[in-house]
Image (cartoon, rainbow, N blue to C red):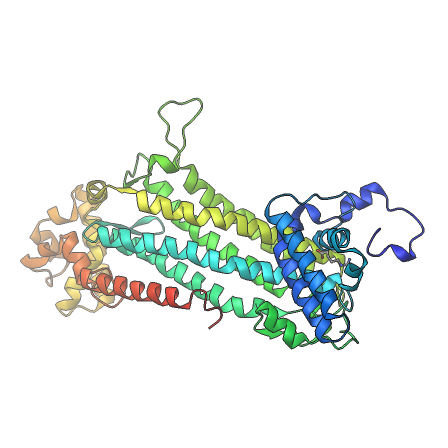
Length: 466
Ligand code: ARG
């Protein structure tokens, strides 16, 4: 019998049944659904709607059904439209007609929104731990390679030398913002819809504050219409996931490029590479390509959900059933992407000699301009004068440091014989000791702050919302 069968005189078309069903994907919410129902049975008893014995029968029955799910024994029937229907149907089979009292005052509208929030609240700490694992891998490797200097790029052109660790740490802070966003979001996920009924609330004296406390929600939805139709928390989560994957894609792209034969700056561990079925020599960076490629998928989920939500009429509409697959897929994607990214970073081989070989003189042109600034030349002019020197060296076909002093002095008398001291990449990075800069002292401070951020992260874990 369908939950809503009473007013219908006709069978549902079988294709409509398949089209309508969400059981294929919402079954994973069984634990949240049963938790919600156990709390609801307690609330019904407190409201005097069922007896204490009936409550206990319902709770025991629900626990048995949970046991069937946990052990993989639960048998779905073709008539199980969604997880809520399936649990209630099985409960009735186990405890008899008292099961019919469980749904008093409740709608699947407030039930499904509650389940989804509970489900996501359980997943958030898992994601936080995976993300933290990646952050730790980054800091550990950064600390290990403090002395490695490489070309820093803008527009993918040589810009200024930086420490390899400095590049690596740049991603730490992007992921730290992702951590922060997730922590802040948790508060908005932790709002109870249950007790909103179909849309208008209920008339039966069921205590929503009690339900919130039982289920560990921080707050209750203040408006029952909003409570059943609000999917902001899913949209927000999907944005979070998409942005995190965008960060992963950028990290991946740098490493894909740098592991090419032309760069050879880094080498991907075999555990994270795959071969070619045709070319025996190939070692392809598939892990990184997928970290890059999955960003398209997650951006798609965000766009898809926002498109579903746009212009929906007030209240629950079946369109909202489309919220789950993108959410679940985003969770599944990140549950693998984050540990893979951490593994790639932990096992990456770094080739400092290849990075050093890529450091040319041009990349020190800013240092030469700074040299002139220290000798009293206004920066705009020194920039121009060094530009002339670069052009002259190019014309003569020599590296900048081989341009003889008279050539430099013909460009500007401000150039002195000590200008050649500038041509030292180590000196160049050490000069950038501003906070957040690439000098060793600044980098060590940055790493120390990152470690602090990580230890704070451990202390807020599981404590729930800040
Ligand atoms: N499977 C539905 C969903 O995921 C459950 C809610 C159904 N509500 C309804 N009024 N038909 O949204």
